[in-house]
Image 1 (cartoon, one colour):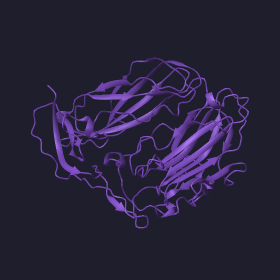
Image 2 (cartoon, rainbow, N blue to C red):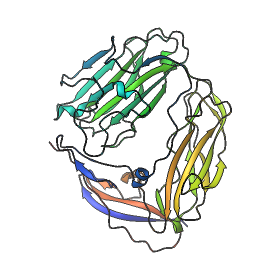
Image 3 (cartoon, rainbow, N blue to C red):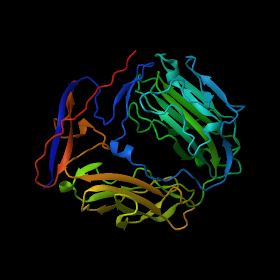
Length: 412
């Protein structure tokens, strides 16, 4: 029978807390504190991933090599004195907490300039920011399908006020009056956590832009002395008929580290995005497991096929299983399988788990106290924070003493 063990519980009242593997460093100028929240295992191994290449011919591109393009508008709606700007050097104030303060030029044209809203350059609370950068009209009249792509880097700060939460939104319109939200950079990000740098953005905007003679793009930043949002290489192009892409969040179980005597079968899970303009059928995922490095393949399997995925939709979760037999670093590779796929560069992703003698870790799992067990939550500002681990085999367990639970507090 499956048992549960709760480790490292602490009682606290009315402060924001979380466990981390990184070090907390204060930014000397802004007074903001942040953590390197990526788990140690993900910082220590670099694996190739699906690339952002896309199979189509772009009919509109803007790389900002000449600054803010003619015909674009730049509005500081709250009159705080900070607007969208063109830059090649990144943020006004370098970050000393390990986060980038510039848009990476790996795979981008950032070296010749890009757009940035640098909320942190205010260097004090300014009462809220609402900055709007809007393109001129783009002619899509001869293109029945349209996909927008771009590269971005967004570093999130806490939502200081409901009226100015920290967001980076992209909208599209065919009349510059009615706007549709097509991308939110802050989605899924915790406080002091950023997107990948660069992060590739791809959105099917055919419903809003396909066949339209005037199409407008709008980039809206809101925040309150937050960090920054940077983007480059905005393009519009037609969608290919068939393009299946792996969603780059390959999953190999609940734990990035697990003791060998508790190692049940890895439940490998993945999803496929239909990146093309037509429905696709019979898409599956090949799962490969490697031990130690990518030369030592210990398992190969294929998921069941997804019968049909509509354009722009994702498949159900496709899964496979593997039972580890030894300690070591296990690497999961997922590869999309689709006959006639127009783009193989976005078909592959990786994830890792370390099987060892005695350590359990949950670095990749979000903690939601309200969802764990009756009473293991919060009432009236008081509560208990801890973690839950599955115990499949009888064994003596000793909680690690190195439980870091720093709280973050905005300093002014």
